[in-house]
Every structure is written in structure tokens, then in C-alpha cells.
Length: 391
Image (cartoon, rainbow, N blue to C red; front, top):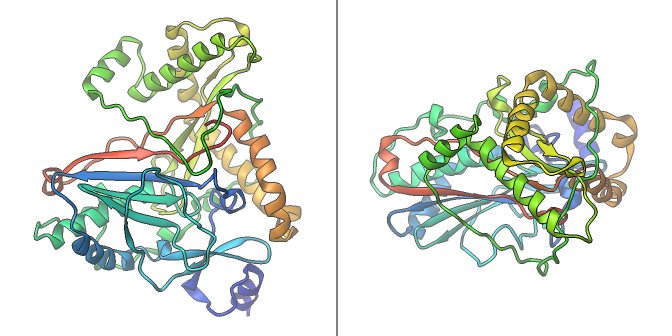
């Protein structure tokens, strides 16, 4: 009776059990935000040393999907929230396009929340944050790549410590978990909201266009530079980005000075015991306030280092989980019908989210592969989703 009632509330009528899944706490807001400019799609790709075989990759997809049942889903509207309905088809493998992370009708019935694209030597996975985060998507892509190499006759052993899952093993129910809900402590106080941040004043590209600028540099060289300032590689690059925005602001005489604040996602799996393959990240916010005067680069490095040390802390992140979960569980929010949420969520997200960040910085960390894969994969790339306000 409880299952049937839950199915009616979420809009699911035909199937019960694991024919449908709830959206996790982070994924719940994205369906209401979807537009021609906001796709929620991020992209992880890998380049092989040889051209990709379309038939072999299709076969690899067929072999891989049963291991990831929580990704073999489509988005469906319920009475109060969207939910994920099992999609019995297989996701197609398609050719790549000029503009990544755009032009994908995620709300269309029967559409998957990710797509697999190929171009010459490249296999690209474009995935919606409705479904998972960068860590979950990377695990899927590495597992798929391992199976593709096996289809080519190259032996690759599974290694869960490297994010390459066994295909003959059923998914652990913990992988379905909304880890935010599991680690939510309602007795904690919430964190305070940030103030409005500086945004670039440049014009937007036409909707559907998303340009990528790619640069490649030596990890050893960047680490050497970072060491001179006593910061990590990520902290050094964050400081460079903040300094660049400070310089742009100083050149824009018409623009009012505001804080320069970055949205830096943190993978929570390193701090909380979980193997969830759903979204499980929160953001920290290193920032400077140029209204107080010009910051030298050494000052920015020091501020970023101390902010990251303070905010990448389980106690501080516990407060963020509490804030986000209380918003979801608030009785008023829960009782609003879905069409009302769709009307107001974009405005709320812009006020409480996008307005508070100048830009973002994402780092998936070191990508490790077994030796049997290293000699066949040249590199990985990661592209964040398009965001209107932060361009």
C-alpha cells in the first residue's frame, strides 16, 4: 500500500520497485531550470590513439548499461517532483557536434539523461546533473572504455579502486542512494547565504552556441609555480582565475565593484563513507572583495588557501547539507504542485545561486587507469555546463 501511494504521489502509475527512482537533493532543482541556454549538461571525453569503432562501441554500451540501472532512465513529471523512470531501450551512440553540452531535449519522453558521442579518436559522455556528478559520470565512462577495449580484444581487468566496475556484478543498492539524505543532520544550524558577486558584462552568444578554449600545460610546471606560493595546484589555478577577474573589473569603469567569488565543487565521497553514483558534491566559495582595495597575487593565494582549508571541512559541509535538505523537506515546498515549482525555481536559483558567483572552477582530480588502458588512452577532457549569468 505504501509503495502504491508513493507511486501515485510521484506520478508513477504502471511500475513499482526499481522501475523508478527519486531525484537526489542536488538533482531536484535542475529540471525546472532547463532551457536553450541552461542544459545542465557537462562533458567528460577521452581520446584514444586509434579511431573509434562505432559497432564495437555500440556493443560495449549494450554490455555496460545493465551494470548502471540507475542511469538507464528518463525524466518524468510527477505531481510534486520530477522522478526517473526506467528506460528499457539502450542509449544510442551518435556523432559529435560543433557545440558541446547543448541541444538535448531532456524532458522529452524516452530521452536518456546522457548521450554518448564519437568523433575520430574521441569518445565523449555528455551527462545531465539531474542524473549524477563528475565522479559518477567518470566512473561510467571509464567502465565503458574498458569494455570497448575488451571488445577490441585487449584484456582489461575490472578495478573498483580505479573506478572500473565489474559488469557481471549487480549494482549495490547503496549506489542508488541519495547520500545527502543519508548524511543529513536536522539539528545543525544552516550556513549563511552569500552576497551578490561580480559578473562579466559581455554579451551572450546566441542560444545553443557554447565555445570551448582548451590549453594544455605540464602538471610538473604548474606544481612548481604553486609551490613558490605555498599552495596546491588547484588553489594556484583558482587564485589565477580570481586575479584575472579582478583585472577585468578594474578595466570596466562603468561596472560597479563587487566581490569576486568562485563556485568550486567538492567531491564529498572523500569525506563521507559512501559509494553513491548519484550527485554527491557541494560547493565552497573562495573570494576576494576588491571594494577594499587591490589584491596582489600573493594575497589572493593566501586567501584561497585559507578559505579552502576552512571550508573543505566536514563540519562546515554538514551545515550546507542541512541547509539544502531543509529546503527540500520544507512542508510548503513539498506541497507546491510541480507546475508552481517550475514557475518560481529559476528565479530562486538565480537569486540564491548564479547571482552569488562570478564564475566556477572544477577539478576532477587525478584520473588513474590500469596499465592495460594507459597505453590506449591519450588524454581526458572535462567541460562544465553552460551557465547564463556567469557566462
